[in-house]
Image (cartoon, rainbow, N blue to C red):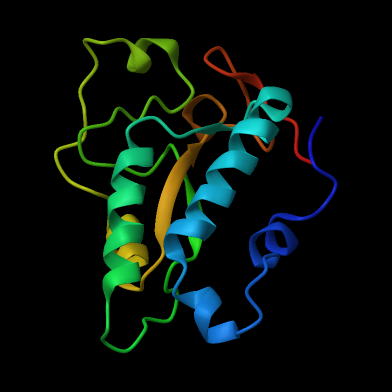
Length: 149
C-alpha cells in the first residue's frame, strides 16, 4: 500500500521543531525518502536505488558534518531519470539489451546530476523511463508499467 501522504509532507514530518535543524538532517531525510521509495516502488514500479543508495548515504553524512553555510538544496533527496548518466551505472533507457551485464556503464555523471549534488541535493534513486524516451507514459520491458500516485 502506497502511503497517502505526499513525499514532501512525509519528509518534513519529524519530532524536530527547528527548521534549521531539519535542513541539517540530510541523513534522516534520505532514510525517509529511501524507505518511501521502496514502499512505493512495490506498487508503482518506478524507482531503482541500486548503487546510488550507498553513494547517497555517504553524501548525506558529509552534508550533516558540514559547518559551512548550507547550499540551496542542502540535504534534499531527489530522484533522477535513468536517461541521465551516473558513474558506474548503466542507463538502459527502458531497453532490456542496455540493462544486460555486458552493456556499457557511464564513465562520468551527467551534468544535471553533478549540478544537483553541487547544490546540496542528494540523488538517491533513478526512475524508469519508456523505451528510448519515446512515449508520454512509462511502460518498459525492464520494470513494466510505472503507475504514478
